[in-house]
Length: 78
Image (cartoon, rainbow, N blue to C red; front, top):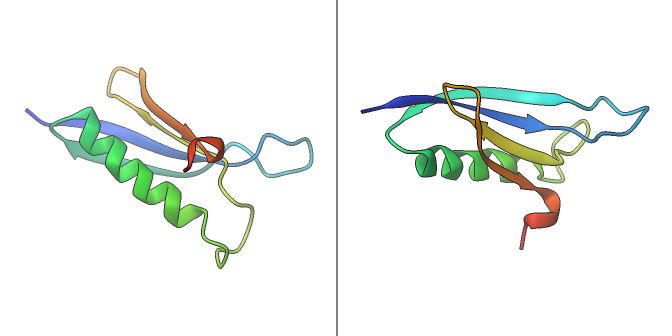
């Protein structure tokens, strides 16, 4: 059975920076792991140096019930 997951790419949490949600994508997949993989790809794309604007700080996946099921920040990259 497929479920809808919401992926949010988050900006920095600085007083003068445009923080908060920079990008929001909804995906339908059969597992949270599939949504997490898509979130990793979106996060990598949001962190490329050529991108204009503020670099992404984190990404999270929220399931249909509103529960966060995956989170990754720039400090987790390796």
